Image 1 (cartoon, helix red, strand yellow):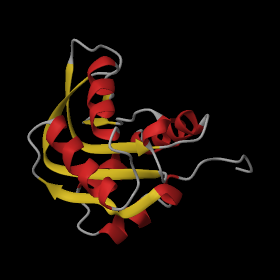
Image 2 (image 1 turned 60 degrees about the vertical axis):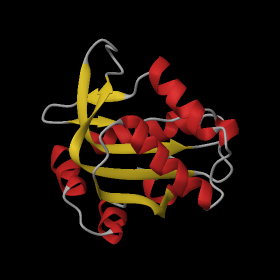
Image 3 (image 1 turned 135 degrees about the horizontal axis):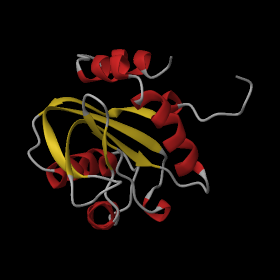
Image 4 (image 1 turned 180 degrees about the vertical axis):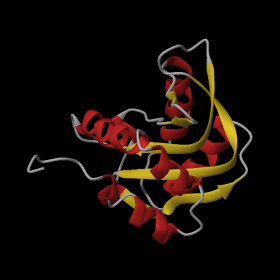
Length: 156
């Protein structure tokens, strides 16, 4: 492909790759991601309340053929340095479905997007859709033990 496509790997930040977590709720996951992101100056103090509110209003859970994933994000004005956080929880966390908020999906893999440029969100969502449609790749990400392996898997 010669198109100018967004590469997920360009937005990975080691401190925002959280593996083998044991969050029980999306709010716990958001709180932990926010703490890491704020510690390194990635987000403003409005990131946590805005991502929680946005997820309640515009859910981001996606039911795939064999599993669920979630791609939460919020307003660009809460992002100081761009990132894609990759969080792999040991047990699925319940998210409302993007296509049917009344339905729930269990997601072990969550991509938290921190983007602050116009159109970046859409480009990144398109890049992530290509990744999450590869069930074998998602399984490898869910089973990854190191941040390096996440970088490798998402650099393909």
